[in-house]
Length: 160
Image (tube, rainbow, N blue to C red; front, side):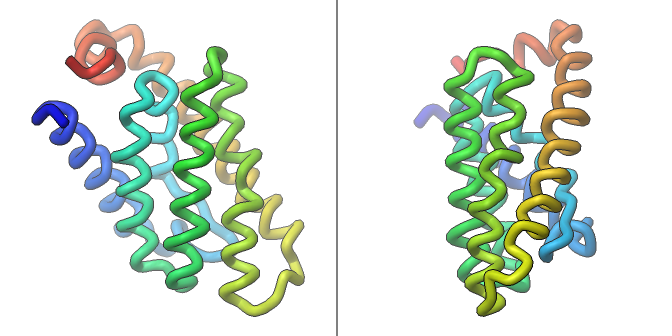
């Protein structure tokens, strides 16, 4: 892996982790809102970002109350939804993937708590938070950032 690619992955992972950890009161639990999920749209612009975002999620999930379940299911959710997102041509449709895959996180929460009671409520809450973070906030922010030549050519463009 080229140094530039590795550096960007480490930077994205660090940003995801730090933002999630600093906002931990909102980032963990059955009712959660992870501001760091705004970074997910980077995988649509450049699939290589899936690695950094997934690593950031894994590191953040080390601090989750759901332990190994969040490490497995939360990280799997991120990687699967980002992989799907990177395969879809339309940014608006792609941005829905994290919300549509939210049931994966709910399975982990159910297993960790020993009960699947509330599965639909938890899934719905996570879907809403993913929709707001990725489909609304992230798409709007990155559509604006696309207009900046530096960002477009150095952050969103394929890594050389």
